[in-house]
Length: 449
RNA sequence: GACCCUAUGGUCUAGCGGUUAGGACACCACCCUUUCACGGUGGGAGCCCGGGUUCGAGUCCCGGUAGGGUCGCCA
Image (cartoon, rainbow, N blue to C red; front, side, top):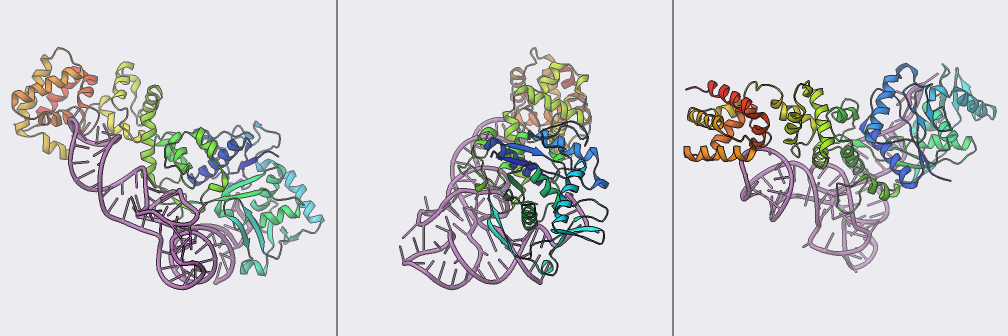
């Protein structure tokens, strides 16, 4: 029987980075084995489920490139889907649950209790075979020893998670349940339920959790917990995926940047680590920088324009050649696109306040006349290309008897307002003579005589 | 409180009874350089603790400690 795995998120309004990795590991396993990935929306809690919340999940998965073989195509619970085992929204599967409850009730494996329905849980330890953790013998907790039965249908008629999760995995012929380790203890309940339905449970693979940098549980509000953050901050999805793969799984050959096709080929469940991993944003940023550097020019340009637009910089107001040239000077320099507006904003708007520390250091009385000399030399310069500009600046510095840096730093500050940025000569070439002279004039005017 | 999982530098990890304990991120120094970034060289930093088993334990077993998870008419 071929592999069938599923990612079954609850639409809470955001996609947790840990959930994204669970989806990723399911996807990797499906692709590795040639099996199928099912996306099932666990929207039994009608009160807080909205189409917008489902959209967040769909968008996140699509952004990461995690395609599913069965499941919804839109956030509309009654909308189109692919696959034969639908509906894939639990809110649309009431009859299925109803049928299954009655089956348990009729065989006295469940019973009514104050309007709810409770399942008769096994009163003994249950062994959970797990592909990652190994066999786990789950004893009853003291509370469970008193009353191990648990509610499967609430008194308002709504089925609860443990029940619908098992029923759907059964109905959808799920062969492997790959999920977070936070479900490990509860798996005993699920196994008991499968047995009550007279079938063998699927194989289980509980993956370790992702913790905050300080080792505490990563919850909704923690920095970096939401996948949307990475989408908004202009990360390359390939980088996020690559980084996530390396949290709990290793190629074991000391490599970090690995093409996804190769990961698919090499990924397998037994090699997944057993211990939790802390999320290291710094390493993700490094990895993202690696991917940005390797990006093709067209894609880089496209993503830059997108990022600038979100920052309120409309590049359409400038000639395409100018925008392209400006963006080219940023290639290979960024770790994330969110740095771009601050890094290259000067191309598209006037320089505002000069970076204070740099101004104090570079806009000095003795630099004033040097800038004036450079300004005049630039005014007379024939070719305003980068190579020519470099010769010009160095020539001016030589005539003044100073190192190039004495001109470079104040000139950069005058042109960009900051002490760091793209290559000075290239940036000046892109800005063009008029803008450069105008910015130098303005800077010179601010320096005390 | 009970039950379950886990434990290699600050972080992610390689190791699977005998290694100078390897790599990556981060950090420090130097080099390259117009800034930043990249790249290069070098450096500091690790097997949680205690018992066993063994000629020999990061590696196997037990106990502690620590971290995480679960015991809901949340998912």
